[in-house]
Image (cartoon, rainbow, N blue to C red; front, top):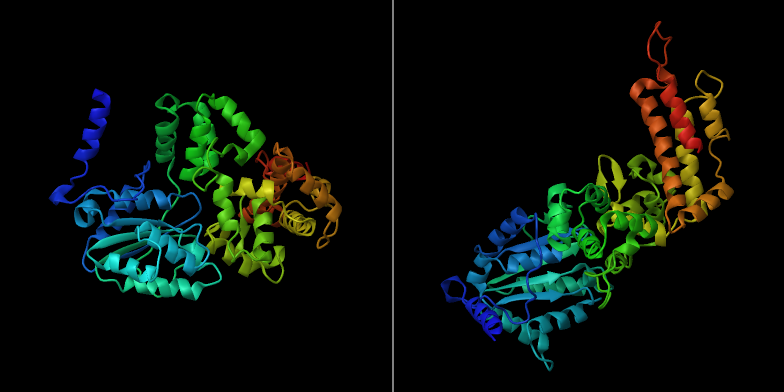
Length: 456
């Protein structure tokens, strides 16, 4: 009884926020573990409590922590002090259009069903200062009724005293609202990633070599780190690493309960993959990108996917499945592993990619018939410009090996081809080879090893 009384007293003591405002809002989800996002939360809070009310757009890839940050903002003391119980959080990931989004919003405001429900919901918001989070706004906005969703946003923006936060996967910016500078969430750094893992799996894992081997595979994505940490409960990290090598992102599924986007990496990614922006060209480029370890140079889009490559790359970046960096389109590791396992490239696209990068290696790397060219002859030797569907089909079947061995070999091929070309362009290849002075160290042994790796 004493323990129960202490819990009740603790809850009652938290009801009163600074200034006498209530710290608990009906229907508001509790705050989640939020590590490494302090500056972002501070910036959003400052925008919401100012006058006039802020309109914040929170952007980021799947699983990067947009919902977590939004809830952290709603539970900050400054926000509680200003808005009290008038803090609302509406999940829209199950609302495919404006009408269903309006229903979800009315439900979050606890407005009962009946005539003029939407107008009554607007009246609730207009009754005093309030803050509203629209979580996963991209679902209705990317649906068939984009204009209807933007009209709904315009009505919300016209409510006096309403501060607004909208989280969107990818880089899209819904119209009809004057947004403040968008806030884009990035993956966590190494220290923050370790802090998240240890907060869930236990501090005994901190600094362990096995953890240092595991965490880089998540590339700082909080949802992936969280699900990995939950898989570590009652497990050994070395065993967990071996399980990852065998099952890859299938490990990132929480046992028990519904498979929602916060408990399943697959469910979270499929929301992005199901976006109407993901046309056939975008899906084809996505599958090729997943088997390339270092992404795709922008100049190669038109070669790898003739006719639609640049448009497909833009779509992938807009839905948050890939990102541009340093003139390349890249994909985070947890996304890449899931796509490679579930959506391998078609034979024609894989053959075109293999031929393109083999040709780069042969063009910029060792040349058959010249000194150091034996490795190049062994690594290819077919005339450039011709696809080999039979070879690509064999590699494709290997890439579908759930233990990852075929996929790793395929990525090793692409990485070796890129290394040969990069080494040569840096000035160590055939194009700039000069007679070596007596006793000088030649680059030939490295070139032979690289060519052998490509051939293997």
